[in-house]
Length: 458
Image (cartoon, rainbow, N blue to C red; front, side, top):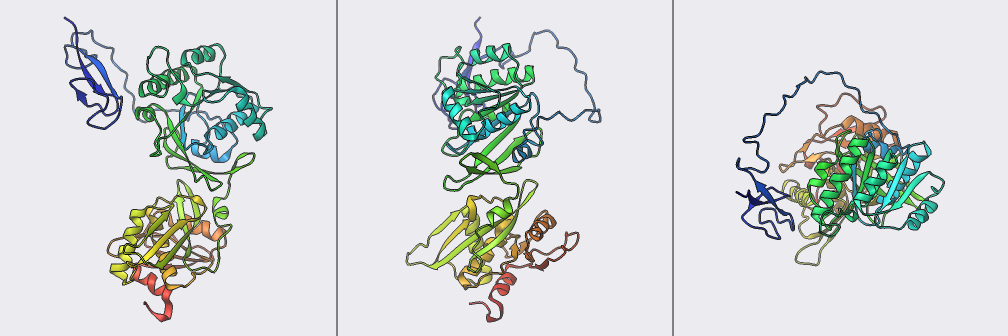
């Protein structure tokens, strides 16, 4: 009797009675595939099969050496990797078109190639001459990187099996295809199947595999979501096309910390690492302008200072405008509501414009107090101290909540010459920072009083 079959969504696992182009459960297209069902009631059931071998379990206290690392020499890149590349690891690099994915991949391969590491760069989008032109522009033409333009996974694996490689760059995974599948390159089945074969080869040979991936209009890596589960690290390149700064962020890393970032600057000769991002983001800061403050943030393990700008102006519209760049618009609405309700500031009839200078994107709630200070400074037309920093989380009751790593934020500010800080109550702080005057605020109303001074609130 022929085995029965069922149709299962490869993205969310929902079962369907027949094939459909779109999964009703998760909304993914072309993700439903047919699977055979055994007598046990599940694909590949073990009922009636021979018994498997017993596994040898071990304790957590076993001795194990840390994995060896291949250091690229690009400090910002090695920081995100967790200290360097681990042999046999698979990395997925995504980002918007033109953000610098191919550039940083070629720069890393060239740096390792100069150290004697055998590197192979496989391009599915560009011809070899185009890659050579980029290498010449970056000044990397002397690096012993092996180039090839190919999209057939069978040919790629055969070539890599014949000649050993320590680093393999695939640019990009959406252009690869398996000749055993009838679908076109870039489809869910082709991306998943091609990645699986390449990952299997990397694990068997111990080569580092760097997959460059396209992103959708929502900023997610195109293809099946399972692709991010198959790899060891997922990296995203972020940045605005109008700004020269690029942020490399790790959102998954089996060999290092997540949420770590590397800061780069796009120049005519490629991506240059930025050793001190705080000084660079504050380089062109307007000093005596109301509505500008300096926020001391934390990105991964790195404290970073950045400028937050706010402009509050009377609105001639029935619905005032709220324009935000580099911060969460929902969080801005919350801060405005707290300032209106708890502090008595009439901001409901004003247009509000908020910007994080330098094209950086702030994600942590510790920026609430800095945003509130910028808004109050703008509506009061009172410039804040040039050497002051702000950080703290604001609650709906108007309280200012403490945030993590306060001492690291203050120390970074002190190194750059800042001498004043407005922060939450210092119950968990270990001590004082030499040369830093710290003002603690427990309620948002105290911040309003500090900015308005003797004149009082409006």
